[in-house]
Length: 178
Image (tube, rainbow, N blue to C red; front, side):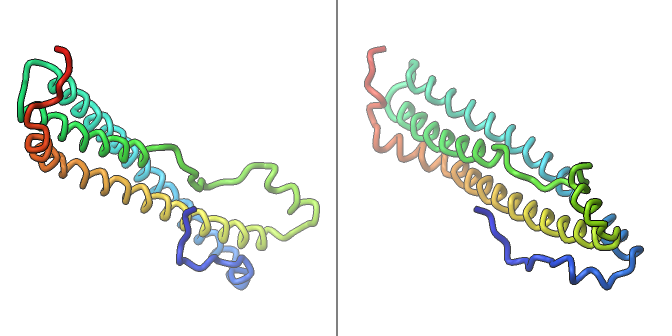
């Protein structure tokens, strides 16, 4: 569950604002959400590429460990493959689909307001508060995914150490029928 320390805006706190001020708040909030979406899509693309590179390198090193290389080199390949495999899983986790707040409304969102003859001013205040909630949610989602990518990068950076450990702990390399 993603949470935030940002206090939730109650639409009633926005009611004293003029319609022009509410329009500007909404415009700026929708713009900020659009930027969040662009940043999230770019980050997802980079994270997907990172996961692909890590998994490809992991599989290549595992295949190499079963080929003609023997001794410490095979152990090093297995160790590095394990670290890169973990890193690929972490990157894939960061790139998984998540809930993300989007700007705009559906026509059905207006039915209740119309039926009770709620003022447009009140609706705009409610929508501005709604956008604030999504801005906070989106920031939290992006921060959490960023943390998974950071952990993935640490696992990638650990690959040479894992290779050294594999070379030392598996001096004969994996023993399989070749």
